[in-house]
Length: 217
Image 1 (cartoon, rainbow, N blue to C red):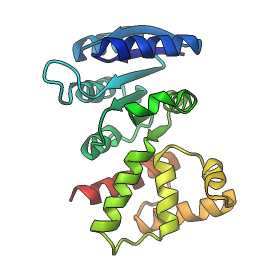
Image 2: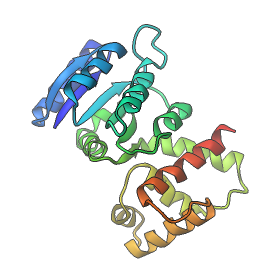
Image 3: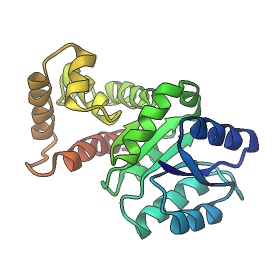
């Protein structure tokens, strides 16, 4: 796998580079600003990019903006965003184009090397991955602000695991239910969220986006 890294902190940038190279991945570029990130993505066309949300000059959302611009230029460019904090608005913006190949993880997640590499592979393969803490924060707030929500507690669990990028079989293992039961729950979610039959990958992303919209309003 060929990777581009965008991280302004030298130690973390070098640490990520070393970690990925130890896993036999190739870091084709490691940069510290959004312009260099866009140049590297255009030139290298990596399998995936790991991008910090906050890059120079303002250290607010330059990394995210560059990631969105990269995906506008080349839809589906796989990008895994790293953040120090849970920022729900950024999650929604990242998922908004529904092309897949996106992830949002808290930086603490990198310390779990095995899970981090699993998530990175999922994004590179076109999957959608959200940090479990982000998912938990979203659904905890939803429970407080929208008690009338149509989904049952079990359906919310399934949707949360969908947001983390788990497949139907993996959701079944996590919840100790059959894959057939998972499919039924997902179809109920699609029906309750008024998502008609079509591309299931697209509908999974849209289902999560609708919940993030509910949170934002």
